[in-house]
Length: 75
Image 1 (cartoon, rainbow, N blue to C red):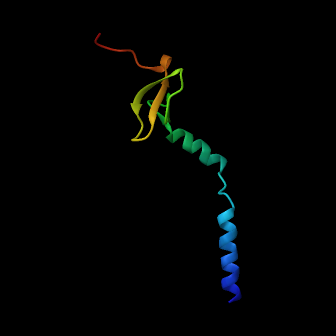
Image 2 (image 1 turned 90 degrees about the vertical axis):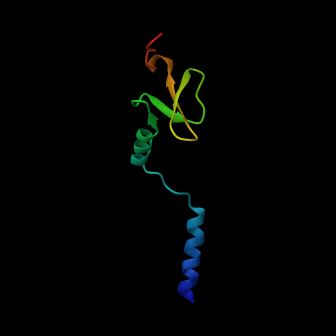
């Protein structure tokens, strides 16, 4: 009975502790959140100085600065 009580206490305490984010995971996450030849960033909405170019997935846009956009061909 005592071990069951200690397990319940530990589970309750773990539910209050926020998860720790490692520094390495931040860099890996940043690489995977880039798009279009690593020049764009996947976001929900682009900033004023950025231009929407392609979709990253169903919920995010690939935002690229205007100077990094490819030139238009066939005009």
